[in-house]
Every structure is written in C-alpha cells, then in structure tokens.
Amino acid sequence: MVSMIWMFLLFAAGNALSEPCLAVGEGAITASVLAASVPELEILDPGFALFRAPELGIRRVISARELNLALRRNAPTAKTVDPLVSVCVVRRSRRITEQEIRDAVVDALTASGTPKTDATPGVTVEVLDFSARDVGEGELRFPPQAPSRTDDPRTPVVWRGWHKSRSGQRLPIWAKVRLSERVTVPFAARDLAVGETIDSGAVVFRESVRFPSPSRSPAAEVIGKVPKRWIHAGETVLSKDLAPAAAVRRGDAVDVQVVGGSGSVFLRLAGRAETSGSAGQRIAVSSAFSKRMFQAVVKEKGHVLVTFDPAPDPAPASASAAVGSGSRIPRRHP
Image 1 (cartoon, rainbow, N blue to C red):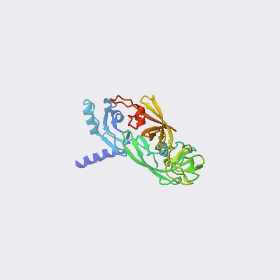
Image 2 (image 1 turned 60 degrees about the horizontal axis):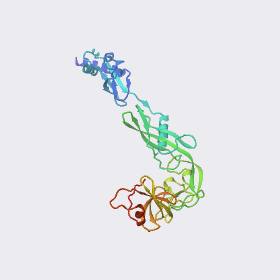
Image 3 (image 1 turned 180 degrees about the vertical axis):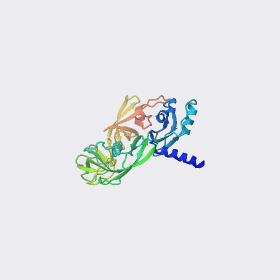
Image 4 (image 1 turned 90 degrees about the vertical axis):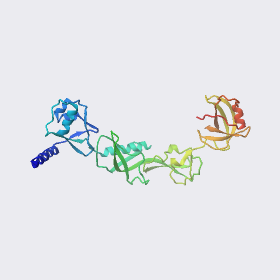
C-alpha cells in the first residue's frame, strides 16, 4: 500500500515536471493567470492575488491542495479542483542583450557629463563581453563614472552595474567595454603659473582620441580662466585644475554700492579691495575715506555690493556711518 502511494506521488510529480510552466510577472499570481489552466478559479475576481510569484530561475508547482485551500478561503461554494491537477509557474525572464548594455553605458556617460552620441564628435562604445544572465522586468543601470585606471582608449574597462526590477530588487551585472572619445583637447603652450589668466596664446588645441572624461576641459572653457596649480608646457589642461579669473584683485579701486533688502541703492562710495575674488564671492574691502574694513560681494570687475537691511533698532546707525566707521552692517547676501 505504501509503495503504491509513493508511485502515485512520483507519477504526479513527473507529470507536473513534464508540463510547460506558466510565465508570470513579478509580484502576485492572480486568479486570471491560473484560470486558463484551472477553470474552477474563474469564480474568483480576475485580479485577486492567490500566490506570490517565485524568484527568478525557480520553478514552482502549485498543487491541487493549495488551489482548493485558496478556493475554500475565498469561494466556499466553488467546485473543488481535481487532486491530480497541478500548475507549474516560473518568473517571466529574458536574456540581457548587447544593445541593452550599450544603451545603459551611454546613459551613464550622459549622466557624467560626457556627450551621448556615438557619432563623431562624441563617444564610441564597443561592448566586448557582459553578464550572460536572465533578468525580469526592469532596467539596466551603470554608475555615472566609468572605472578607468588609464587614459588609453584602447584599454578595456570592466564596468559593474545592476539590473533594477520594478519592485526595486537589484541584481549585479558587469560589462567589459572599450570607450573612446574624439575631441579637441587644450594643451599648455608654455608653463602656466597659478593665478595667471589664460589667453589664446597660452594654449594650443589638438584633435585627440581619448578615454571619455568630463573633467577634461573643452576649448571654450579654458580661455579667461586661471590655473589652481602650476601647469607645465605640453600638459593637458583639465577643468578641475582651473578656476574663474578674479573680477577684482587685491589693491584694485572698487565702486561700493550699499543696497537695501529690496535692491534700492542707499549710497555709493569709493573703496579698495584687500583680497581678490571672482563674481559672487565675498571679499574684504576698505573704505577710501576711513580706511576701515568691511565685507562685500563682487558684482563684476571694479564693482562690489554691500546689502544693508534697515531693520528697526533702538539706536539705528545709518548705512554710510556703518561703512565709513567700519561698524558691523546687518547684511543679507544674495
């Protein structure tokens, strides 16, 4: 008798494994999905969630006992499912394609500030190898910055990313790619000192194929800036090594405008810059009349602003007295 029961169970399991499985999406398995194989479930609401979908790569067999338990809980009067009936389900999946990898790499380069086109000028993406794995519904992502340890565009890099499902689950992926970018690169025509304003004669521009990097300066972003470090002749000029040129330099005569919170000008006076700064930066300025120092914001070359908020005060001081004497001015900087 026991042997007959085992034979029956093995026979039922063999039938379940030989049957094609239903491909289901991520999340819950609804009544409508199973009703095609189990008509007794048609009594339930089509969108009613019965079971959880299996994980990727897992084959699940839903037995008649599980189906009848679900029916008794939700439709007690429904017809019972035949004990020999079972339903095999698997998660719907697909194999990652080379085009998906290329698109995800291009999106990551775009996020890092590198041109998106595969045409010249721009970035060429050559996919050499990648994760050959099945994934469910979702999208591929790579971090914005490629893991480059070389400036040689002929050297492949392994870029590690992830596949993010609709529920937020992440599966690790990788891609071995070769990236190159054809651009106009600025090189120092001579040694460039710290703080020296770069003009058209200080750099030369050459066409070059390089590894993509947003830290390298396009030609239009070099002229008029100043190096933050010593740049030797023949060296590539990088945007991370440059800063905006100072609009006001230490010792410059400046026009000081004292304005209210509404933007109206209270007064103007002559001053002298005690520190250097570019537009938007705060610098120290001394009054040409009293020689007292105060803080001001650089507006443009030769012009600085002091914002004065005329709040009620038991012993108010005028804007001119405060600036002239060096007293602290209540300020609200933009």
